[in-house]
Length: 147
Image (cartoon, rainbow, N blue to C red):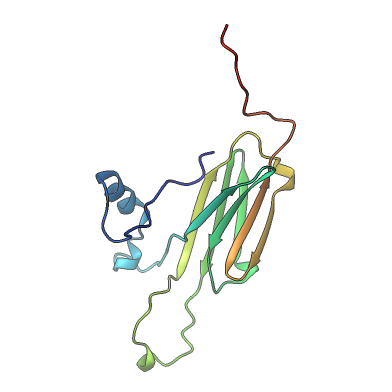
C-alpha cells in the first residue's frame, strides 16, 4: 500500500541520505521559513494495516472536527484543513511558537482492496483517525504456484 513515504525518526534535523534531503526540501513548508505570507504545514501521519482495515492517523491538535475536509477522488484520499492562530493574547507575552499553524493538505493513494463506501473518520484527542475497511471480495494477495 503506498500511503506514505518512509522517514527516519532517529534524527529529525540531520538528513541521513541525499534522498532524505530532497524529500525534506519538497515536504517542508517554505512559509514557515518566512518565504510567504500564507502559512502552511505538513502534519505527521501514522498508517496502520490491520487484518480488516487500514488506519490513517493525522496529528493535528487544537482543531475542531468542522475544520477538516476529506475528499475521495477515484483512488486518492485527500485530507486538508486549516489550523488558525488565535491572536487573543498580548504580543508582548509571546516568546516562542513551535506549534504549526496554517493550512495543510495530505494526499494518499489507496490500494484496490478498499471498500470506498465504508470509510469513516473521527477526531479525538488531537488525532484525526480515518478507517479504511478492506473489501473482502477483492483479493490483492495470492500465491502463484510455479509449474
